Amino acid sequence: MLAVLLDPDKCTGELLQKILYQLQNAVPDFIFVGGSQASLSTNRLIAIIKQEINCEVVLFPGNVSQFSPNADAVLFLSLISGRNPEFLIEQHVQSALTIKQSGVEVIPTGYVLIDGGRITSVQSVSATQPISAENKEMIVSTAVAGELLGMKLIYLEAGSGALIPVSSETIATVIDNISVPLIVGGGIRTIEGIQTAFSAGADLVVVGNIFETEPEKIRGFINAAKINEAYS
Ligand code: 1GP
Image (cartoon, rainbow, N blue to C red; front, side, top):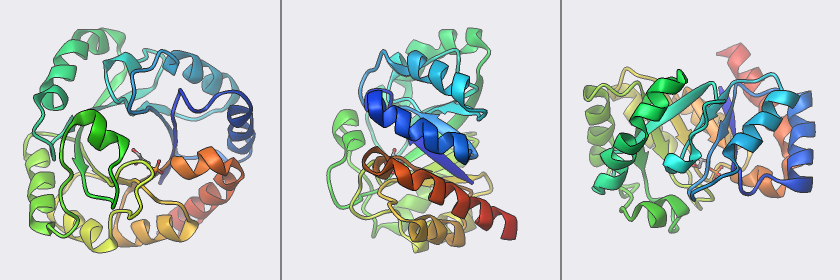
């Protein structure tokens, strides 16, 4: 499956119009909404998406400010590759009652940041170190720890705009060791890139950055993911 990631602070004006036009013609499995920075625009973007497109909207929040009761679900992310309590539990405590009372579906997600060849926003904002892409043992142990802690999804993240996406070897090794679904994202810019991740076993691939500069590519990616789904 494919999720198109929209950052509420970047997807505005003419770019948003172009993105909506694409999404009206090819609907992805999910639209993820989120970014690394605090945002007051999440509600507005979700309202526009809901008005224009028939697709599940899943929050992929960088922090508590990005929660919206208008989403269909929220990835309740714990940055388990890092050692910063702010993103392991603090943001969760701050948002727990609001999220519970909203009735929005909550998906506990183990979020694993892997070095993607450059310092990405998630690394700098979270003030955590990514796991080296070479350190397969640490990556797998972290993913399995997330599963054992009860997380329902594991998300292997190279960081938005990463130079090097998570490798197919890493995806395959993690898949072999966990029994919850696997999300993969960060630095995937081509249809071949999503196909590589699917072939390695990713259940859901997230693509965002490339569509901010080339929104006209959205339809092609979604159609390629649907073909892949049909044959898998
Ligand atoms: C980022 O995994 C997502 O958190 C998607 O990455 O923006 O590089 O596609 P890109």
